[in-house]
Every structure is written in structure tokens, then in C-alpha cells.
Image (tube, rainbow, N blue to C red):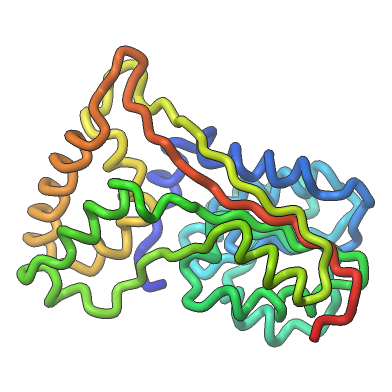
Length: 267
């Protein structure tokens, strides 16, 4: 991913973004781990929670964005956790030390063919170790489809060849692959109804949300003049797709989860 990720924009809806992490962590067995890795740690909220839950563990947050890692280091200050810049695929293939717990939230959707990576992540676990993952499952919703439709228009498409776009699978797909890698698996999905901007201060809260995540690589890849035009068109389309209600702008958001415990040697 080559986008310039903005931690401050990402944290605009931090409470909503952190809820899936809390739900995921609640399903992780309570056995204290010795070594924990958060792959795609973003601004570090999850790393801090992991360090607070298991203060005696070695907790590492890894992210490919230097901007996110700088913020994560501030977030975990005062704990024993650390944050480093790194690529999760490289880590999965190069780190020789076994891990008790791997956590990854809202990251694997950016890794092409990430189903094939899951057995490699399982192989990094000790027997009895856990891989806990969650990815967005809303790629068929207007928040994504409208961006794709706009990006396919000729004046934009010429600049967007090869730009990363997120992709994820259904819970059953993750269950199948992780079970085949020698794990017992708890897989499920939840749809959150995020109420954005109930006070009416942001005329385009869904655009604010997506411009920090799924739409950001697209926006960053466009020349400045086209970027503003694209953003204006996307704002208008999202405003229609997600009208303001009496409680605010409601963004339905499906998330897919899996907690896999390694019980056999993969393969």
C-alpha cells in the first residue's frame, strides 16, 4: 500500500473503529501469552489494549505506514509494548520465533490473496497459539461500490491502474482455510449500525470515514485537481446513499471475524 495514511483522520471515529477489536479480543482464550504481535496495528489502540490485558507479555505492533507507527508509539507510551514499521507478509515468512497470539484487525483486506497467507501465519504460532482476525465485510455496500464506479470513469481510471483496493471473504471461507491449517476455529460476522455525526457538524461523515480507509489509496493516487473533483462527486453520491436521519447518519458496517487455535502441525 502506497497511500499516505493519516492517523488523525483515521481516529476521527476511533470508538466505532475500535469496537470490532474489543469483540474479537473477548473471544480470545484467557491463557496468558508470552509473545503477542498485532499485524497492521494502525495508531496503536489495539497494541495498548493487548499490553494492558497481558502486562507480562512481549507485545509488538507492526504496520507498513511510518505515520501510523509514529502515532502508535505515542499511544503505547507508558507500557512495555513497542511498535515498528514492517510488512506483515515479510514478517510471516521471515520471523523465526514462535508466537502465542497474532492479532490482525482491518488489515488483511489489503493483502492480495490473503487466504493463502493464513497457513503461513498459523505456522508462526506455537501449538495452542491463537490467530485472531477481523476484516470488513462491506465491500458490496455503497461506501465501496460508489467509489469503484467513479474510479472506473475514463478521466479517473487512467490514474488508478494498480491502486490497491480492499477485498475480503465470508466467515465460512476463513473457517475452511484455518481448519485446513490445523486449527479449531470460531468464525462469525456482525453488522454494526454506526451512527455518525449525531450533532450535525460534518455534512459528509461517511466520506470522512471512507477517506481515512477504503477510499484513501484512490484519493492519494489522483492528481490534485482530479482528486478534488473525485472527492466532490463521491461526497454527493454518499450523501444520497446515506441520508441524514433524526439520530444522525447511519452507516451499516458488516465485519467478519475468526479466532483460530492451532492444534496440529499445518499441512
